[in-house]
Structure formats: C-alpha cells, structure tokens
Amino acid sequence: MDTFWQTCPYTAAALVCGVKASAADMIAQKSVLTPTQEEPTVVVEVEEEFDLDVKRNVAFLLYGSLYQGMVHEFVFNHLYPVWFGTGIDLQIVLTKVSFNLFIQTTLVTLPVAYILKALVNQVATDSDSQQESTSTQPAQSQPQLQVKTQEPKVLQSAFDKYWHDIQHQNLLGKCFAIWGPVQCLTFTVIPEHYRVTFIAMVSFFWLIILSQISSNDEDVHAQQVTTTVQKTD
Image (cartoon, rainbow, N blue to C red; front, side):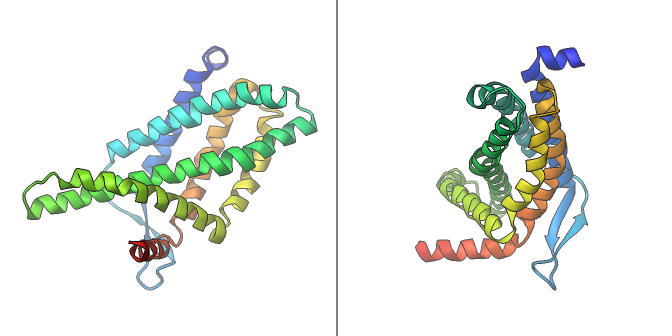
C-alpha cells in the first residue's frame, strides 16, 4: 500500500477523498436535520426511510475526488514546497498553516463547500417543484429557464449563508481551532504521500461539524434572505 501511495499519489488521493465524500454524503442523506415546531432554532435528528439520491452522491464523489483529492495533492505537495520551502522548521510550518487557514480555507475551500451545498439543495427543490407542476399541469419548457435564472440567486444565497455562519455560528473560529493543530501535524510528522489521506480522515469528522453549523438557524436565515430578495426585486 505504501508503494501505491508513493507511485500513484493523485490516484490514491482521488480514491480516498472520493470515497470519504461519498460516505459523508450518505450519512448526511440518511440523517435529516429538522427544526422542531416549538423552537424553530432547535434542530433535532430525524431518521427517515433511506432512499439514496444517486445524482447528489455522485456530485459529492466527484467533488471529493477532484478538488479535495487531486487539487489538494497538487497544492500541498507541489505548490507549497515551491512557495514556502520543504523544511519542517517553525517558520516554514507556521507560514504554510497560516496560508492554508486564512487564504485557502477562508477564500476557497469553505466557499466551494457552501456553493456545492446550495446547488445540491436547489436541484432538489427544483426537482420537487417540477414533480408537483407536472402532476397538476402539462409539461412546459419553463422549468429549464427558471433553473437558469435562479443560478445567480443560488450563488448569492451560498455566500450569504457563509457570511451568516461566520458572524453568528463562529464558523472560522471552530474551523481554525480544529485545522490549525491538524495542519501543524500535516506539515511536520505526516509523510508527504500520506498528507491528503490524513487530511481526508480528519475532514470526514469535520464535515459532520460543518453540516451541523450550516444547518443551525437555516430556516431563520432563509427567511431573511427571502425578505432581502423581495425588497430588491
């Protein structure tokens, strides 16, 4: 196995991160987080009959394989050594960790995750709406146009939710508290060819935390976004 990780780093990263993302999405699909009627901001976990959304799961699998796997393999093991050096002294390690947290994670990794979630949720909503419309009226060509016109709103909703969680859910504080120490280990004691695999293992549990963070106050935030959109229309 060690030989495979060293000779085929991109393949190994894609396999590990793809399987991790797919498994995490299966858990997310099986456990539905639903706000209670008495306290809208209180979220309870409801077990429903499991019916896997294959398209959604494939989307997460590709996201895990391509971005979290292959892109991170290139960034961590090829770009970082060129930009910051290959040593494990304190200055180099802190520079890598700081860049990863404040630039890469804050400006790329987390926004991409929120955009993906918003797109997946929008596709599910459009699918439900289309099924309802087809059951009450003949099929028309309008749904495709509606999906296209909603794309900018999906992106805006994703960034609004991201900023909301930063302000009200301490998203970055929790992220840095976990990934700061983890990335210090990544760039010091973890062998280079196992870095992405190690990050994927921690990321599996981080995705559970991130799912809880992004689900808190979701209905309240959605109402705020809807009100804002209505005022600007």
